[in-house]
Amino acid sequence: MKTKKMAAAATMAAMAVSLFGAQAAAEGGSVYYLNYKPEVDAQWQELAASYTEQTGVEVTVVTAASGTYE
Image (cartoon, rainbow, N blue to C red; front, side):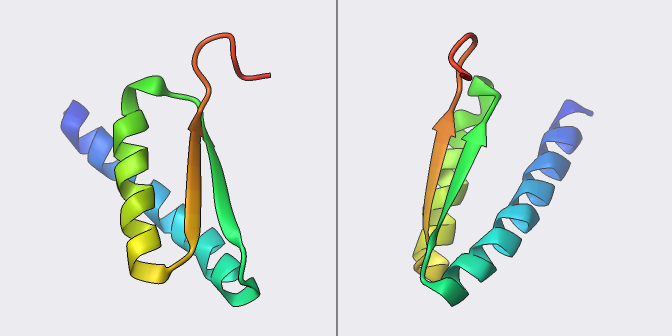
């Protein structure tokens, strides 16, 4: 069940990033994403690299570990 939730969350995140990325591509910009969950940092980094490769829009993912959000 946990795998299904992770897959659903990753799919939703990919769709959200694509919406921001589409506008960034149109404006020649980039995407900056602040991740609050260090346990999924590797997946976000992989998704960002894949998105950048496919669209040419630079995606920066920063993970805020416990106590470093501010």
